[in-house]
Every structure is written in structure tokens, then in C-alpha cells.
Image 1: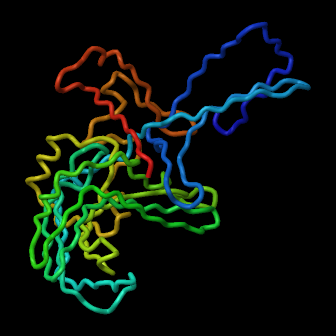
Image 2 (image 1 turned 30 degrees about the vertical axis):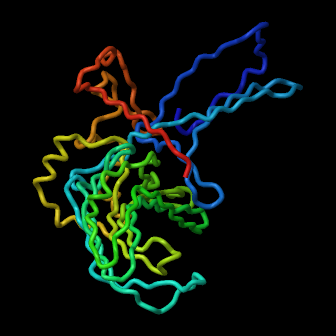
Image 3 (image 1 turned 180 degrees about the vertical axis):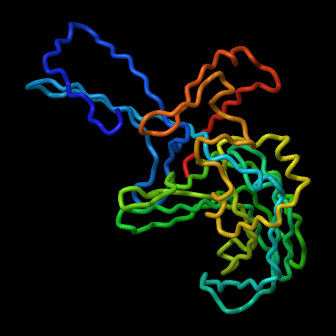
Length: 335
């Protein structure tokens, strides 16, 4: 019962000789964050453990702990994130370095970049079709990178925060001196198996004991002048994205291509969460990972919110091109 302590142990229980098995089952929230290990500060992670302890009178209490991996089914994108988007950085000065690697004030020329994406939501393992252009108005060849950047904020109850950024290089190229490079020549890229975006899991009210202690988000950028041995600065065009738990429906993406969402401006990577589904409410852009379509039931659970019970029998033996159940399995590479 929510709000009440668990019953105490029966101190007069006598265990028979041999092995005693106690079957148990419990439900996770269907909007529970997935397991994650994040490179921010000394300790930044989302972990789930199963812990068991047997309490004996006048004897050492044996215990065991096992870590389990929880696959998330949130966030998923709202329709606004499925339309094409483009960002342009006009001609801007780029500066060189001395042979000692120190910044100097000498401007070596101007560079402009533009980046175009088919949408602003991708699941791990999906192809990312990149478009755009890099114009090199200098006398040096300039290295180009397509980069997935992860932003992490780790907060404590005392309101101190640690912020960090990690880069995943998706593709590389070079634009020659005085030339141009079509960014599509670096495409397609593959979205790496990173942890899906996480908004912190707390909508409010935020208090000292109830606050988003860990959150992370992403952006994709085309970066010109990324080699610090050659250039002291870099020019980039950046688009915030949502790394979702499931790929969007093909028909939803196709419909979004014919529409313009010019009114949807997302400059700050954290704003992307305003256009994502985080809770147990249904998403109309992606397949459900568990739920009613699997002959399961989404039901309220006292004290913790909504959970999902699932019956997989309807999907057994189905290998057709359009199965109603579309499981999504995420594997994670070390950062």
C-alpha cells in the first residue's frame, strides 16, 4: 500500500533443508528512464538493481545484488520534429595558429556553413541524411566534420550543477582552398547507439528533494576548421535534435515533408524537449514498444503512475512486413 511500510520479517520462519525459491514479479513504470552511463562529473548514471537479503538471528545475513538493464520507451517526437530543417552560418572569419599551437590574431579568410536535415528526431541506428554546403574562402584546405554533440547537466540538491559536452564524429571530409563542399557527400551518417535523450523526469513543482538531477540532449552540426593544429577557431551550423527510443512512422515523416514548420524555432538544444512525448500518454508518430497493440493493458498502479502489462502471444510467429508489435533494442557503445 502506498505510503505504508513493508511488513516486517517473520522471525520464527524455519527454512527447510535444500533450496527454497520465492517467485516474484513487479511492474516498472512505462515511462521509466532507461539505464544509462553518462560522462558527467564523478558519478552520473541511471541504474536499476535487484537486491535480496536474508536476515538470520545471530548469523551473518547473506545478500546479493544484480544490475538489470532497462530499455526506455520514451521520449518520442511530436509531429513538429519530423519536418525538414536547415541552418545557415554566413561567411565568418576563421583564425589560424602559430607553429607553437598558440592562437594568433591573423585572420586566414572567411568560411560559411549550412546544414540541412530531413527531420529533428532520430533513433539509434537510423541513417541520417545530411545536406548543406561549406564555402572555403581561404588559402588553406579546411577539415570538415559532421558531429553529434551530447550536452549533459548534472545537478545536486544544493543546486550546484556540472555541465559537460561529448562529441561523436559521424563523418569527415576536406574542402579545398577557395572551394566548396556539398555536405551530402559526407552522407549518409549513422546515428550511433547513444542513450536516448532524457529531460530529467521531473515536470514540477521542483523542490530540494524532488528535482531533475540528471538530463542530457543532443545536436548535429557541420563543423569547419575542427583541426586545432591548423585553426584556432571553427565555424559551424548546428541543429538540435531528439534522440528518440523508436524510429518514427514512415507515413508520418512523409506527411511532414510536405508541410512547413517555419514557426517552430529551436535554437537551444534543451528546447527540443518541448516537442517530445515524455510520459505515458500515447504517441502518434512512433510505434509503441509495449501496450494495447500487444494485447497488453496500460493500467494505473498505486503510488507510481502508469505501468504496462504485455501479452506477446499475438506476435508469436509473425514475420510479416508490418507486424503490429515493433520491439526496439538499444545497444550502447562506451563514450
